Each structure stands twice: as structure tokens, then as C-alpha cells.
Image 1: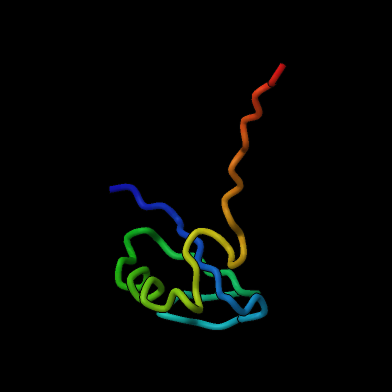
Image 2: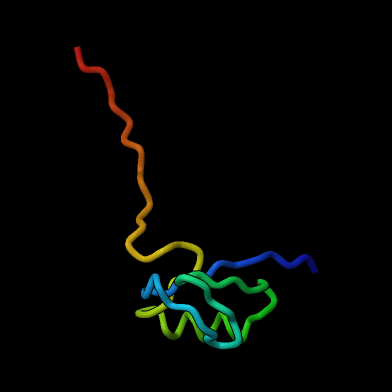
Length: 69
């Protein structure tokens, strides 16, 4: 099974430390996708941590404009 790196973002962008066994530097941590226990912990603490995208970042949907004549 291939593993991939997963980024974890702290709401506190200045946070440097360890949470759930994952080291953070300036609010960003990284863990392997096989670290299911840590990922589950971060999902339970979603008010403080975000998986894969920083807090405040939203998906930008492109609007398709149709020419009206």
C-alpha cells in the first residue's frame, strides 16, 4: 500500500509544537496517510485543526457565463 503525505493545519498559524504525535511548525503539520489514529484525532478536533486545506480557504467555483444576445 502506498502512503501519501497529508497536511494538517492549525487554526493558530503561529503554533509550533506536537499534537497527536504530529509535529507542527508555524501552524502546519504533516503526517502519513497510514497514520489513521492521528487523522481521526484531528477530525474530532475540527474546530482547531483542518485536514488538507488551511482555515478560511474555500473552494473557488468558476462561473460559466453565457453570452446573451
